[in-house]
Amino acid sequence: MLPVAAASPEGQQVIDDLHDAYLSLPPEMQDDIAVVTLPMSSRRKNALIVNALQRASTIVVQNSLREGFGLTVTEAMWKRIPVLTNFRACGPRHQVRDAVDGCLVSDPENPDALAEMMSAMLGEHRNRDLWGLSAQRRVHSEYLVFNQVNAWLRLLGRLL
Image 1 (cartoon, rainbow, N blue to C red):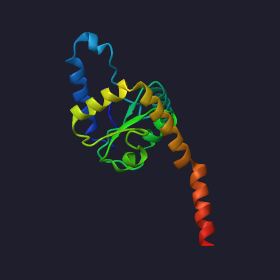
Image 2 (cartoon, helix red, strand yellow; image 1 turned 135 degrees about the vertical axis):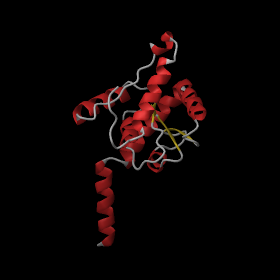
Image 3 (cartoon, rainbow, N blue to C red; image 1 turned 45 degrees about the horizontal axis):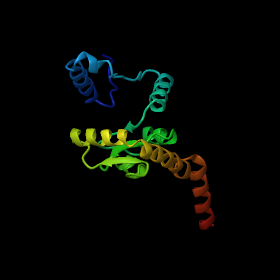
């Protein structure tokens, strides 16, 4: 088991719990599951792995209890991957519009609700494509640096 970043002290317990849950599954289910920890010692390797995982994903789940602007969310949205997040975490709930760019669950601490929404999203083939396209357009119109510079220039123009 790899050590988890010090920024997340409860992270190691989560990894340990996942490991135990994985080992309790029947072998045929274990074959379909991978528990991955990212190399925190190399930003480059970390970024390459996150990029590869996002690009291979059908949906990305970011179920933070507290989070500001979520770069993981925006990266997935830019790649046309719908995001499942929740109404509690401030940043992600403002980034992802429910049923437009992905979906939001009301209670991030309810694993049944999260699993139900994941299953629903995975079954919505046409909507997933639409959510992904909408997500990419949102990033393009709201979060790219060019739009931020343009907003600052408009503000400065109004102030002058």
